[in-house]
View (tube, rainbow, N blue to C red):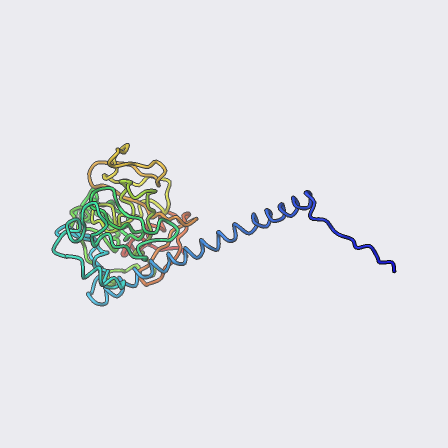
Length: 323
């Protein structure tokens, strides 16, 4: 009985393997950007949720106390984050914090260790697109960094003129939700929503700041727990992610072994005195996340005009913001 011969197919030829590999490479090249975009969209949503929690904490504190949190206090040293801890389900840290001591003394900070209260991190401190878990190690008072900062408006930390002098000269002064009473001396102004004559939906409370590349960098951006200046606030002097350098007296002009300066960090420069300011910055492509006083959270694009950005930074400037 004759049987048909069995045809046996050999393995892939080298050419066929190369074709398959090329096809896989093309598919990966096509899919990878989509996967990366989806991951970034997820990170941005998480960031929005974090800043929304800070916003809600401020709303709840306002309902409970009649005002937004005090931005900074000199004696003893602390800032708005400490006041909002109980409202962001961080009660254990609030209880452990010794409010009679400044932030840089035990138990609040224990030098050169992460054992102090200020070194206790929380997920809502961080934007996942930046460096979650980032810490400040630029001096012996090690503490957690954070990406979320309060709106200081179009004023430097220490303005060149007092509020009284500006008003006496006939200047129209548009105040931000947070700042000094007279714009110069470090005495905080407490603000309530009745002062938001521009409307709470038009006024920013919080935005983002981008961390430096290393914990040891002596770069106060993201030093959210520090009452020093300008650590815990952003200004609307420049638009989001501006190429113009931020300014702080805390940055050594060229850096040093004990206070390194990383040229790959976002643009920064050094000045004397307290006339510092910094722009809102993020690791998101194209803009920053902003929390508004009505409780809403939005992405504001880098291309926003300076006039609109500064108008959103004031609570009583009577500006008209184009939709």
